[in-house]
Length: 110
Image 1 (spheres, helix red, strand yellow):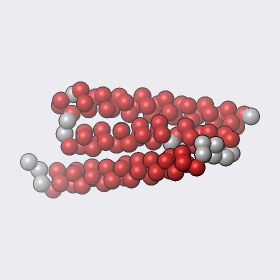
Image 2 (cartoon, rainbow, N blue to C red):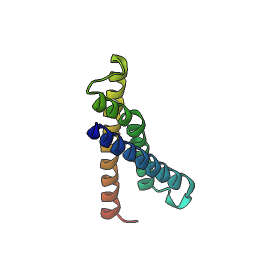
Image 3 (tube, helix red, strand yellow):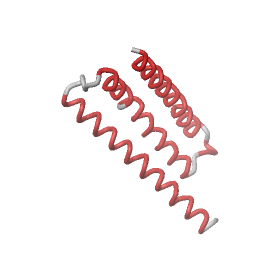
């Protein structure tokens, strides 16, 4: 009872904060022409990947934890897992691209 309620509250807070924060990042990068550098576009990509995880994985994970079993069927299990792995790889590769971009800027300044 109490643990499940706490889990639902925590996940709900995480979903709300993630959607708000990542949507705000997307809005700022798209609307502000001064922030449209390569790093900003990488950060936009990272925010979009985080939104995908928040919308397409977090609610399903919450329901799985609350029910102690997967209730969405086999196909949705595969889709959810695929989206989770894709988003994870996008995030990891985007962070790698940011690091390489920053390295180039430091080693070869304009």
